[in-house]
Length: 388
Image (cartoon, rainbow, N blue to C red; front, top):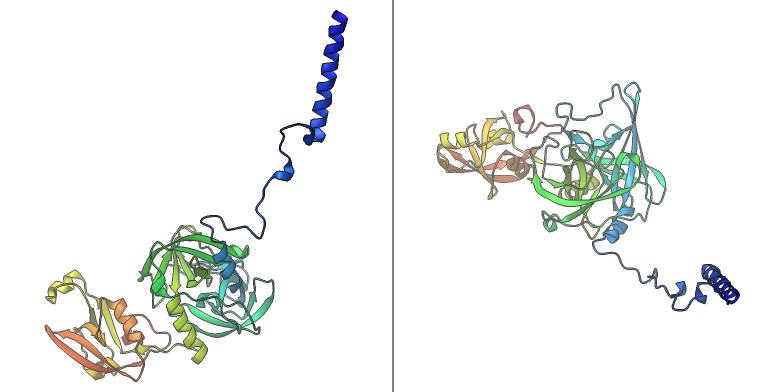
């Protein structure tokens, strides 16, 4: 009996061993075991973007964003274009050590016309002796400067190529605080990169970056090398040109500033047509109406722009505007402060008469001013020194 039991036990052990080995090599030997051939996978044709993906916006916009490399001779190395404000930075990379005479910088740009026109920042190409543009398809080509406007920090380049993938423009009226935004550029020279955030604020001004400021603020990560790159919406349409960040470290801290597409487009069109931008000018120095000034002038609220001084022989003086007047309207559009006055006057066409409504000794006067042409290289709000 014992011998029979040993034979039975050995037979069972051998059978289990055979089944185990078979299961390792041929899983279909085992009953009720699912075959790998029954697994279901999404085909390429049937693949859909995951919820919350912005791949289509990136796919649409990225071919229109280029990398810009410039070189120029310099006497000294200044890594921060804002020496008096270490936090506020224009973000373009700089690879040249302080001792060298040849400065190499990098930035980004956006193809706006298929004929080879590229939009970027003025500070990216300022003083550059050679400009190279690297396209998303790997091609590199020399670029020429069509024109630049330092007062808005916009520049237009031209490359000798046709059929380029031009970006689609959105309208500034479509942009709202809270909208998702994608920043596309070449941070630190690592290559084309997409970051995501939201529109944090609109109409940011008085930052001391440009003369004419009306920035979109975003928390999309923007770093050195992103200057001149695109800020796009979730459809891949251009809503702005990235230009500066607020940072204590030099890297992104969630406060980036972008030139709205409406401003960039207007400046771009003037540069392409005429080579530069023409703005209105009347020859005054202005300042904001503070609560204290409003009280002394017996105003109901601190609104308008105080004419602090008038340039001798300028358009304002010829029209009868005097120091101490409070400008409250330009061609029927109300003036809230000196920044708004600067923008309104700059938007006027030179050699065209405009109506300026002012308060003088609590009396309202409407004066016709023959607008002049804003001189180049003017200083904001210093018209007695040829500034607006």
